[in-house]
Image (cartoon, helix red, strand yellow):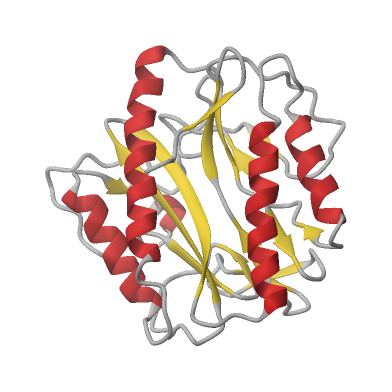
Length: 270
């Protein structure tokens, strides 16, 4: 685990087995303003790490780059110590759906690499991720990545006050089905703010049981994971790394989003 300078405030869960949850879904104006700043910083960190995704680079090197970028901007990398997670970001390659742990794995030509990074600053979190192409990537994988980004954006465009939260998953799943992609169900978007995961769940598939109506001031992530094959998965013995059961590739993108008075605002833009 990398060291964080002592002057940078830690989230409440660092050094504890479980994080706090249960903050209000609707945030006040001051919290939203702080989330804008944390989200912008997370987006800048993601872009900096993404510039180094290339064949020959280890995932641990990506972790170092993201860690140092956040610390240099007086932010704490939210994943570090979250439920014992040992690194400052997640790196999920190829068949890894999510929560890959950076290590000495060397990125190879043709890999697709998801980087998931979250900044904690001024008491709030900004959470974002993207899937990057390493060198020349086959067309099937490249299209999966492009379409996963489009699926996320369609989900974001479904955000508006007065609409059911389920509208997000409905449009994502409808789009993914056009290409016969699997839509991962057991890992979802989440409420976020002063807590990393507030308890609010944002499915990426059509789930009529989700009856919550979106209101101005709500903040949550939208982060669909699409697969070329099955949505069934295994979890490695490390307790974190989630891989497709058939070994086929998967991609993911994520933004932290605010419900506004007439639509949405993406909080994780650089």
